Length: 264
Image (cartoon, rainbow, N blue to C red; front, side, top):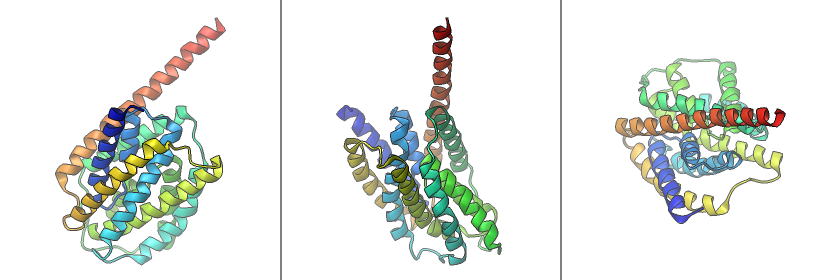
């Protein structure tokens, strides 16, 4: 990969890490967006995004610790259910013709989620451990299979259901994303016998997200979720979603043409 392209990808990863970490997220969907725009091979996208997720989520966990009441009653049932599900999801390899459109749809969801404010309340509702566990299993499996930490699903879910306040959500999201990302990486490693990543690509990206994650989490732990940053991030994800959906469609069309030519 050319140096100029590598620097642009690193700059994009830095921006994603900075913006996502302001709300206690690792940035997995953002990294998938950048890697999709850069046309990185699908088999490298998932482990690369999860590795960067681990780095930023670790920083966010540290920075957001103590910023709000840590909801053990929500967090532990969630991770106990999500970790094995994320591991299984990581070991589940989607074919490229399915991976691209699914990632495109998830990026589209993330874009809408970021552009639509969801306000939390200061009062929380009680819920059953069963409901929390079901949520953890669903989020965990999708996280491992796609290559995200699950924060884009967890945050709106717990806020809309009234399980946590905005501050509590950020406090549990970061360690949730960290553990899910590690489990997903474990599943990928078991399935493939290693991580199909490019060291020359991953190394500069890690440096970029360490800096961005520290800046964003430091800012976010004091002033949660700046609206302008979230809107800008949503636009980027929308563009990446469009690219993934369009390229998946064009790939299918090309395969159909090749099949027709072969039959002729």
